[in-house]
Amino acid sequence: MRGGNSSAKVFLLHIAVIGILFALNFILPEYHHGVLARVMVLSVVAMGYNMLFGYAGLLSLGHAMFFAAGLYGAGLTAYHFGWAMPAAFAAGLVSGAVLSLAIGLLALRTTGVAFMIVTMMFAQVCYLLTFYFSEWTRGDDGLVLGQETRRLFIGDFYLDLTHPATRYMAALALFSVVLLITLFIVRSAHGRVLVAIRENEERTKMLGYDTFANKLVAVVVSGVICASAGAAYALLFGYVGSSFASVQYSILPLLWVLLGGAATTLGPFVGALFMYYVVDITSSYTSAYLLIVGVALILLVLYFPKGILGTIRERWIRWLP
Amino acid sequence: MTPLLTTRDLRKNYGGLRAVDGVDFTLLPGEIHAIIGPNGAGKTTFVSLVCGRVMPSSGTIIFDGDDITDLPAYRRVRQGIAYTFQITSVFAHLSAYDNVALPMQRTLTDGRSRAKLHAGVMNALERTGLAGRANSLAGTLSYGHQRLLEVAMGLALKPRLLILDEPTQGLSDGEIAGFMDLVREIAQDATVLLIEHNMQVVMGLADRITVMNAGRILAEGTPADIRANDEVQRAYLGTEPA
Ligand SMILES: Nc1ncnc2c1ncn2[C@@H]1O[C@H](COP(=O)(O)OP(=O)(O)O)[C@@H](O)[C@H]1O
Ligand SMILES: [Mg+2]
Image 1 (tube, rainbow over the protein chains, first blue to last red):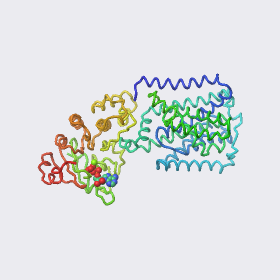
Image 2: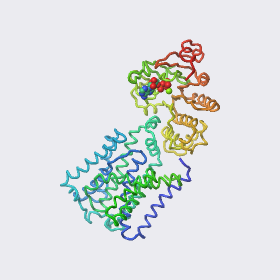
Image 3: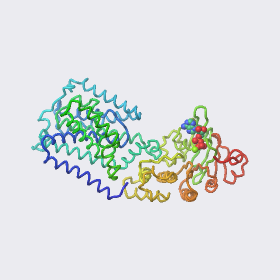
Image 4: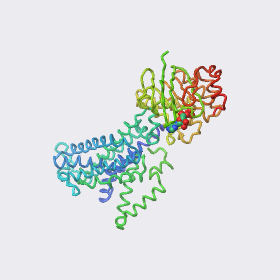
């Protein structure tokens, strides 16, 4: 590890990022304000994905199921049982924890390409389940959570999460908590073990580590983080539909992380933000925007194989976590 | 004295090849025990069976009175068996410091204290002469330094049994002398099982020597016994050590 000096720098950097995002709430024009709130929630998915892929080196192609677990865990309980927001959010987290524990126990018997395929297949099963239970989920049409279910009561007073500034602050709160948690984890003893597993699992075992247990913890932490984003998405944006469980939402976090920089704490946010705007801007000019996005990705992988922040860390700012 | 390690009729077959072929072996606590033998004799395979990196085809391994034959490698490490790899396998993309911090952080009883971890890591790096390289990426170290880093990682595990697989390979003469001092120091509170080709190192360090050939034990004894053993002379010492 490095000295206390860079510890302070690292902490200040993360606080500064959170501070800037806070200030932007008051500055940004309405459209970009809305975009940023959404991107903050989506980048929480990317941060969860990064824990597993970036740090532990496990490439999953099924993380949509964890996002969906949170989305449906919160959405269904709020919609059908009228659960209040904190309870619905907690239901989302618990769904994510249970699902990721089960998936981890099964999928971690495999590695490499087999792990990719197994996670993808489980995610596909989850996707199909959202249609199988369409009596409850209404499948592709989905459920729309009304304004009255998206109020957070504190005594008699309540926060209305359909209000843009409140929604923005709620997204920022989730983003900040998850960012600081990931920062803490990657700098902890467990984080160092995850990196060691990524670099050489056999060697890590010979240092006395139960690598299976460490990977299982990583899967659950990653799954719960993604579920928290799903639960927040349902409650903040009020829509719960099958498309969020589709393979697209398994691939996107991978792209965001690759773009922003795998195994960097801020890379997932940078990647999600960058990609959102690339799609947004190109799609306003041409219907072939996916082609442009594809080309942009190829160029990035060619010239910045470690992603934006990964490259910056390699060339300039070595202390970046 | 009750042995620290005993193997009974230990075997490992690779297809038709008997890499380890019925080895009965005893290691006494506190000794420096060398295993010598020509290339392909089965030395690495034998110690891999002991540390759990490779599972035996048959036979038993007893460590400190417990049957550990079926124990996974990481549990054996926790019981105090540390293995340093013959083929250097440090974490190339991590700093030398982090390479040592990994085993060190697990053996710290209070776990969390960064100051304790730091002190322990720097101590292991100093003992192996690598303190000045703490922040270098392990992959950029010279081959000799990577071998020493392997030893530092082994030390950080605070082992009761430290297995060194050809640790002096690729070291300069000066480094070898320093290394021999280090092994003597380690042996004051750990048992050392040393696979070594350099006969000067073996004769200078070992309390007892086991000679392996073709997966079997050919001879066992003090350095003087081994030097005087005709069979060993013919099979191994007479030929150029590979
Ligand atoms: N994983 C393996 N698969 C097949 N054969 C192996 C394997 N490991 C070692 N061997 C063979 O077992 C024999 C003993 O090898 P080894 O234990 O490395 O010898 P030493 O360390 O004494 O040079 C050699 O013939 C080697 O080729
Ligand atoms: Mg060998």
